[in-house]
Length: 193
Image 1 (cartoon, rainbow, N blue to C red):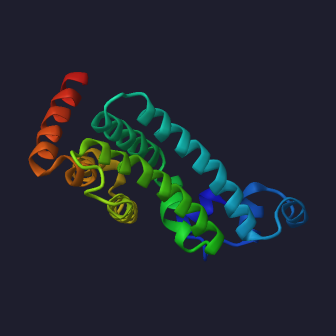
Image 2: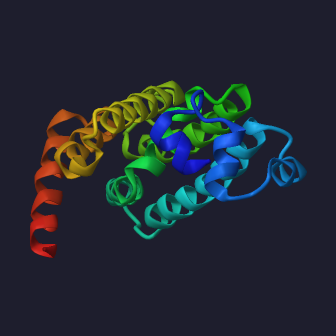
């Protein structure tokens, strides 16, 4: 399911094609899954657990919010860059897979919004911004990644990750501090290489 959907798209992927690639009879497929959507959801759930574990683990490994955002960003980018076919399955085709798949994606988006929303603790007045700010930022980041996957540019993630990090930090740190953070992180990355 992942391979076919990631290459051809959800709509163009059939149960027959999945069975053919997996070398299992249709009856075996139907014993395990009610339909194509159920198969997609099963694969999506496994992938989202892996993705969530990587991102949340990276985020939790640092005490400062700005370092947490960087770590989560690098973990997410690493996940997407490992396999562009899998990235398309996970981040792009979920939109075509139906309401249940989109609801699962929305749960992931809310978790990302939680990570970004923690930036309110960086403000003098934590009520100066609402949760809506984090949701908008998370949505903009998601759609940027989705477009990079579609454009075949996800393998150049380091080229645009800094822009996404800036987008996440700017409402909470201000433009100048967010720009300074980008310079500091660039130096850290250069030293690490």
